[in-house]
Length: 184
Image 1 (cartoon, one colour):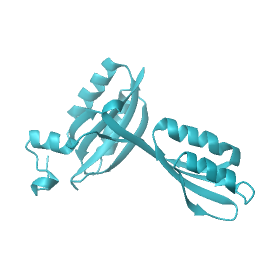
Image 2: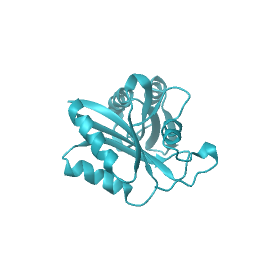
Image 3: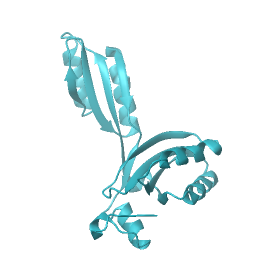
Image 4: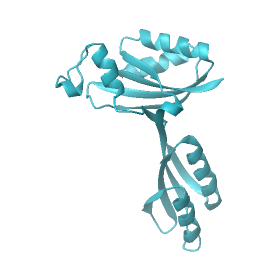
């Protein structure tokens, strides 16, 4: 099995996430990561889904997703052809005695302190899965008190957007065309 990242453009309407998740549930596919958010077009949302399947199963997943009414387009984001990142917020125990050590770890991983109290520091970091994992391992010695981690998000390299490439081919208005009133 191998991990695959899918960028899925969907209508921004109620129930779409439930239908997509239901499809994965019915087919007994496990979602490793799921991130959903708005796009440059307010009528369209973007899902980034990471699944761990064989290549023949990936084709089946894509075909099944494509049958859902609210799905506009699906593209696989290959690591070498895209920029991918996760976000974490992590609260650690911190004292004045270990602050220098914490700062050294944060500098190594380009992480920043976004909140602090007399007993804790809340840290924000972005990066690929390996960087995030390494940072968390380095912070464990201070005592992780709370962790919030986003799903993976990704975007293709190059100048054209997924929406431009997809929607213009399908004659669907894009935000750049001045007609952002997409209806399926």
